[in-house]
Image (cartoon, rainbow, N blue to C red; front, side, top):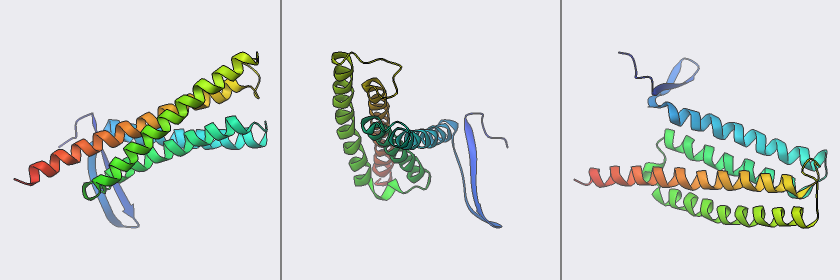
Length: 166
């Protein structure tokens, strides 16, 4: 029997031993890939703006974006490994962390935008606050996605635990 188009089949092997075979929606695997790319790009921005441009604010916000993307990636991986079923408090913790970093990233976005405008900086200058503003927005996006994924997984596992009580 063939799986529907919206479902991808994953299998994890160690040598000849099959460790895990499960079918998950393709959207989940795309989210894992997206979070992986976000992690690499965010951490690359951290290195580039620290080493090449010596712009610590842009580097910090790029690094934060990468770390939040990594956290979202870990959330997905723990979901695939069925770890969250036994630790719903961890999902609540991830949700709260996402909300906190959403607020901090929003404050950073507004602050950097205000500084760039008041100091009449060029948009194309790699040392301008506009790039810090962009990376603040990227951090805001990953913090929001971390909260969203945590909320969805917590809701799913809470529904399953309610059903298993009967």
